[in-house]
Image (cartoon, rainbow, N blue to C red; front, side):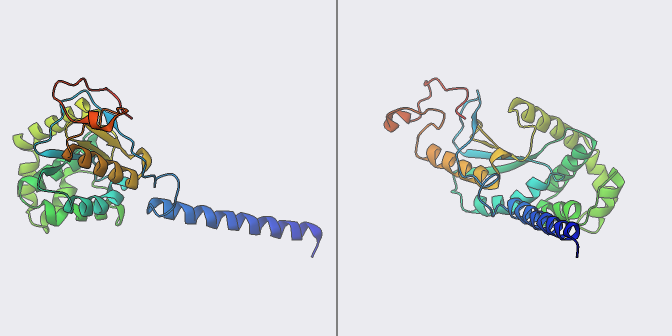
Length: 243
């Protein structure tokens, strides 16, 4: 074996090792199992210029079935929601920013209005991200739902109805008003916005802290030197951004 061949083998071996490390790290990162980016538990959120509403504490998830990060977050979020108190109310808003996300948002609303969401919510995530179904038109998604609780004709009738159209516009306006265009994102108590920039652990860690603070009567938008000064007062000026 010549010196050039030995060098080539060494270089290829090193490249292969690096590739294995990159793939392994990427896999762990996607699953939120590796320290570093995407696994931070640091509290990171934005305080919006909106009134705080804590009776009940409403949590809104802005998501899309087309978003792989939303798909990964979904089971973790479901488990977290199950552990919250009776004074917390959870709802989802599917963003609608283009033809595909609008189609999927309307599908979400149809399933919700027909009482079919619980049995089909995860199915749609899996169809897109596990089976690579793209749902290129309304008829395709209606056919997908045909054997899953609602006939395709009835699905399309609801899909194109006035209620769904009005609901889509309302969802779009809420997303614009709260600056929640990117997904996944959470809106806590009408005032605190958590984005996905820190990963799934950061989203849930921050959300839990915000809920705990509000339940304890403290305003998370105020960061005083004296913690006792952070009790919620309706006439207290609220900082615009506490991130």
